[in-house]
Amino acid sequence: MIGFFDRLSRPLLRALDAEDAHTLAVRALRIMPLPRPAADARELAVRAFGLNFPNPLGIAAGFDKNAQVPDALLRLGFGFVEIGTVTPRPQQGNPRPRVFRLEADEAVINRLGFNNDGRATVLARLAARANLAGIVGVNIGANRDSADRTADYVRLIEAFAAVAGYFTVNVSSPNTPGLRNLQQADALDDLLARVLEARDRVVPQAGPTPVLLKIAPDLSLSDLDDLVGVARKRRVDGMIVGNTTVSRPASLRERDKAREQGGLSGRPLFRLSTRMLAETFVRAEGAFPLIGAGGIDSGATAIAKIKAGATLLQLYTGLVFHGIGLVAQIKSDLAAALKRGHRDSLASMVGSDVADITAESWPA
Ligand SMILES: Cc1cc2nc3c(=O)[nH]c(=O)nc-3n(C[C@H](O)[C@H](O)[C@H](O)COP(=O)(O)O)c2cc1C
Image (cartoon, rainbow, N blue to C red):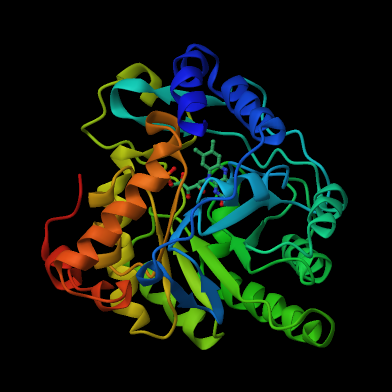
């Protein structure tokens, strides 16, 4: 039924403006009756940040910014869902058009700019599902015109701790001017100190909600040294590597669209984001687990991310070009890879290719 709907709707969605297609897809997920998915193979289960994931594949932030369809996404077979980015106050984002599909490249460029319904509305939606099973993480960000961006993150931690499976502190969106400066060591140290202090303060009411840091794939390696050093010192629970890139790989075929401002995601992001993942893995030295995101669109790319250091995975753009059947395909390819290697869990694969990847020339 889902597969049928998917095959029928994808050509239609692709004929629409990228943002309209997305709105329609979310609307369909809201009304479509979805059966409970088959239980995942036991060897796909992952334990990380104190949470038990039925499988390692999550949907990345940005698809369900306003927590309209987290349970539908779980029913599609994702092992976890990350909603957001949410900001304290509702925000319109940048003028349209602001999402562009690069068909020939299987890529997207977006400059949405944290359009979202704001804390109160999103919180009400998550509170309404609070008793349901499934891990729903909350990705948080600052309002564009905020006078104190750090205070925005702190307020969101306090507001959402009771309903969030985990938090992602997003300091890596390219579409809020200056936001990425929060990745610099001093600013990040202050931000993480205050965010983690807020998290610790609400533990008695909300429990110990893990806090992850999501970074850009565009950092220099010396910035990454500093950043991982701060993340380790402050004891974040994990990192997501990473967000969209402001770079434009030489391989892009849709040269006109490639000139649009914004963050690039999808297949052309795979090499850079996988390299940054491996570089982060080397620097984290096992202090916390990593979520690999960027260009996952097959079982092979999912396995490559795990071997580059990912304990968990997230995807978004791959769905646009391959449909929701991709979720089942990746999970079945992961299970087959485990069987072939006579392994009983994914954990033993994590980081196994890091030495080779970090020895390659830098992705152009
Ligand atoms: C249209 C769009 C909107 C996004 N919005 C967000 C967002 O609000 N917050 C965030 O942290 N990442 C956002 N992302 C980035 C994704 O979460 C992900 O990190 C990135 O797209 C790389 O994964 P992919 O190549 O599988 O898409 C967005 C991506 C896309 C394509």
